[in-house]
Image (cartoon, rainbow over all chains, first blue to last red; front, side, top):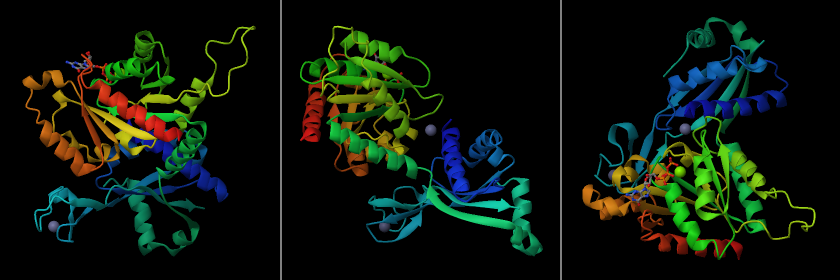
Length: 115
Length: 259
Ligand SMILES: Nc1nc2c(ncn2[C@@H]2O[C@H](COP(=O)(O)OP(=O)(O)OP(=O)(O)O)[C@@H](O)[C@H]2O)c(=O)[nH]1
Ligand SMILES: [Mg+2]
Ligand SMILES: [Zn+2]
Ligand SMILES: [Zn+2]
């Protein structure tokens, strides 16, 4: 359900960009999806297939996902560490004063148009 | 990572096999968060609400934590002081909108999300516009709707879910969430984003505290870890205990917004 909603936002943005660039068919949409973005890539591509094929602009268009690893920064010691492996507690110093540096992106990176 | 067959082939081509393919592929760079349009629409809506002096509260929680019960208790304490309206977001029913209307008498409409797990700023704006329609239609001898008859406070009961509504700014002035005792005091650790965006966290169903290992102090500590500025208000919506504090918080915020 969540992924389908996201797919509708992607389609809206892609349509707009295609219109601005005078594009009639998009062959690939490349997404940057953060590791802790709450998006499940397989669900997203499934929802995409269903919704994209309803649009002339996007019929057969692939949604390609490039994952972004999540990294957390620690204010306690100033170091960074991988979020998924260690969660909210810094593995270097044990501090809980940490925040997500990157990894929650849901971003359209680029459109590829084959002619 | 999920790459379909066609994509991998395409990637292989891109990796040097065919220069011709490269020439035939045009790339349009976008580099834009899918939330960006919504964030912009939400800011615009907040601007409109400020002009009109309408305070919009976005109320979120898991299903069944007591949003509707809390709203009824709160509205009955405030409805003689300010004009209130309610928008109930539900995937498919209008049970809650009817319940609010019957228990408080204030205007209450149902927003159907059409299967979506959250409301966005556009849907919220459509709801606000529906509220602005004079209902029921004015009788012929009735005058035109007066200036300044828009509500002072609109409460949006968002879809029951701690993940998605946190990601979509509805255009609300303040965000509130209800955490009920049976859900456990560690929810702020499991749903950090939700707790980090909420200005007030209402802890409901304190009447059942004796039956659960719910640590109120730990819960407050976890909430403040995610959001040091969050106001925490323990209540029992069933009996009304503590609801006064939430009603006062709302009155103060509404007054501040109208300044
Ligand atoms: N014991 C107890 N039960 C409560 C309290 N507040 C609400 N309930 C009960 O919890 C159940 C759900 O309450 P609702 O107010 O419908 O919760 P909700 O969050 O609006 O639910 P949805 O809209 O379905 O997500 C009902 O059976 C209420 O009677 C409380 O303070 N104590
Ligand atoms: Mg409800
Ligand atoms: Zn969702
Ligand atoms: Zn550290």
